[in-house]
Amino acid sequence: MTPPRTVGPLFFGSDIYRGSTYGAAHPLRIPRVSTVMDLCRSLGWFSPGSYRTAPCAKPKALEIWHDPDYLAALRAAEQAGDVTDDIRRRHHLGTLSNPVFAQMYRRPATGAGGAMLAAELLAGADRGAIFVPGGGTHHGMPDRANGFCYLNDPVLAILTLQRAGLGRIAYLDIDAHHCDGVAHGFAADPSVLMISVHEEARWPFTGGPDEVGVGNMINLAVPAGFNDTEMQAVIDRLMVPRITNFAPHAVVLQCGADGVAEDPLSRLALSNNAHRAVLAAVRGLAPRLLVLGGGGYNPWTVARAWSTIWADLAGFAVPEQLPPEAEAILRGIGWGGSGRPPPRPALLTTMADPPRHGPVRPEVLDRIGYLMRPQMALQRVV
Image (cartoon, rainbow, N blue to C red; front, side, top):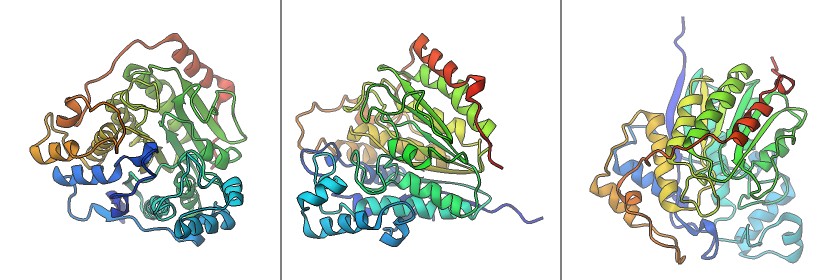
């Protein structure tokens, strides 16, 4: 009998994230992926061969979902450093949310290239796990930028898995913002189970429980103050049963860190233990796991959350106190010129948050119950 072929755990990073910024007035002026790379390297969490440089996807590869005219406009804007009014209107480039900046094609194309290569490697293996923290840009639309996202690497990764012959893909999104781009891509596809847990009444103001398509879409909008105990209830009562019943060939987990309590763009109250709990719950539900980054606008909480995700994925112990080399990395980053207050001391000296438990509110249980009704039973495509 031929032994099963395993890939990973692998980490896909790139130096393009080092010094790349959306501009001084943008929430993504902060360092994120580069800090994760530096933290993990300082802690010895890259074993030989586990770190790989993500490739920059070529436009032709991106055309499996994105419009060629949009891709041409995106590349031209990067080269020119400006856009016309017509391009701004048609493709939403050069706006406050989606500004022109020096790597506006190459940076998202690197996230997409990493996600697509990871999908190819996973599809060619019997089992495996790959982390692409530069991915997770789940708002991008086929012909326009949307919500800080110029491309949609989760959609591109899922399409890559499908084209390689994997028949059922579960997409789980725990970003504080609803994955409107992914929903746009797969609302009519019953071979993709999409579960999104996001804050209610938060941009893009989509993802209500009755917003369903022909395919398997589950939208759980949670209230402000959503805590670790409530996330565990969602894991136990919704995520695990639905994904188990669907029996996917691969799980794609978008691990946005903007639900952590200190994030400035949400009102959720999670610790990074919630992200680790989701990872622990789903990694055994399919033979292949692709983990992507996503939102996150506090540089310290993003770096700590995604670094602990990699540690758990790769089997490294998370220390209670960071060694001086790792602490120096966290002390060396900042808000990028914003007037926000400095981080609390624990964000500089530890990696794992203290748990943020709380009551499981009736509205959370009611919404889970609504989504688990028999008439919401999901299709399974053989």
